[in-house]
Length: 210
Image (cartoon, rainbow, N blue to C red; front, side, top):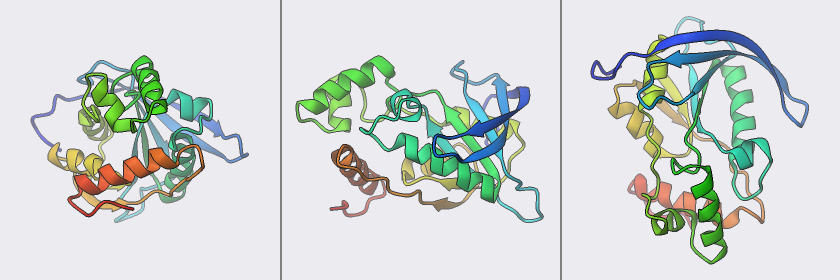
């Protein structure tokens, strides 16, 4: 981990049983923290067992999405990605980092403002810019702090977004692998997923996905 990062500490640990709407159940060890640089209430869910010799924990930095994670909105793929991540991490052993940065970091109300602009024809990134924000304002410094506080060494990152991997690496996290997530396509989120794929390709300096 980078020595330049302020140290965070674990505040509370508590075991929480989890159950999803499709019936999947597991148990997580939930961690809260003191000293995170943005002062928000981010959470780490320890899932499964990665204590075997040589095991590299699977880590999913998952940005909060109230509409998708809680209410099942079909405008994004956040809810299905969260459900997938919990099971895959529980099977492999690792951590789900639940990061309180709604709407790619612009906040819940602004995200809903962006939805209105998307209804008028902008994509999800163009809408953020039209509102005076960057395309994506998420910052993974707290994720690196959380991993350091948890005593986690090298990790495999569960994401399709190379920016997450790049930021964590720049922050001193040793990333051994980027593990892709599933694609959860529906008629309601097709344009959203196409915009994400195009931006991810640009971030990786690859041809856009068509």
